[in-house]
Length: 524
Image 1: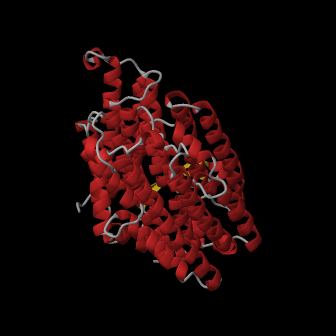
Image 2: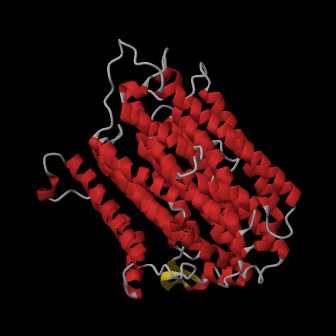
Image 3: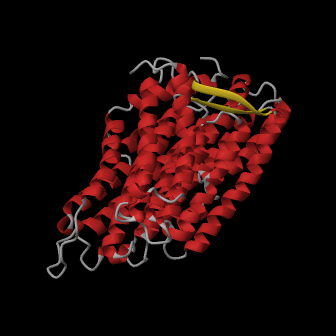
């Protein structure tokens, strides 16, 4: 790692959060004559690739300059008073919990911009598309970087509008209804969350997340903590999404353009679970303790429900949409994340954070692949993809078929790939939950979650068998296999899925000290 001064680190983090907004404004301005090239549309898409690329490089430099010997310490911190009357500060910082999420966001947004340069979704002008993509990136990065409750709420809300327009203007069938459902659910959840955040801030006298985490709930009565956890938890649970508040997700994914689905699954869902770890666990531990068993119960219900929904969609003759199936699989995967968080143990929370990153990589890749299949077949309908003898993707586009099978086995949690560690550690954490939580109840939850892993394997193997296998029908022409731009956009996700699976210590070494400190009330 390299030695970078604290002032440069502060600048880097602030740059990473603000630069996408500047890039979004620049995207809407007329391009200078020398940069237009033959096509102004291509010029603005190239601008999107450049801006997201620069932010990714800045994020990598931030990782290199990060003090890996002390990942529990907030680094690159900026603290400027913003609204004195409310004691609200522009407070930024990064530790071992938020750093991987920042890098994941920067990487996925860059890959989406790169993919869109070659395969722009059908819809209005690319100018608006690139600007919305960059505003979305800024809001997501800010969510993971801010350390003030009011600022967290503003960043949390900032992503809703660009995602609404990406679905409503560049989406597929039923896009208007899906976009409205997305915005209504998440806004209603956010209103309740705001009340909880204000309650915490006003009762404790500060909105500073670091000070509140260090106080570890000592400045809040148990009743205030219980109300705060209920209110904040509902807003975060909608975004996660937790069963039964998940029903906006399948519609949004099915209607969204490919890059919209990648960012929704890969990054936006992580904002909910991150909020549980960063805000609810350390700031209101007694309130969290009260609700933890209920959170675990909803989590395992989501695991089973998501898997059964996927099995129903994968069944022959059910006209299941492959994008919808992967959306339901996200409900199950995020159930494991919530189960780990509900255990309130370092093992469970580390597992949840690992599963968060793994889900972002693997499900991002799956949505890219389904988008490619939809481009080639004109549909994501499983019965059409499977055809009479199976789509025989292995025979018609062997590399595409092989990569789909790889992503499916990574998603079902094959040991040696990223999907394995997070879910296993989440169940380990729930197997021996924090003191005061009912062990028999949690053992029951673990047993149900373990059954859910079998259902997950079942539906993903059914999908692979139906879409990839079978002899190539003589009358069916070969499909275009993986193109150069697709290889460029997908290979980093494949490489990181393998790396995280074979060398989990890279990620756990960052998160574990930070989690230990968070659960111990700010004491390393």
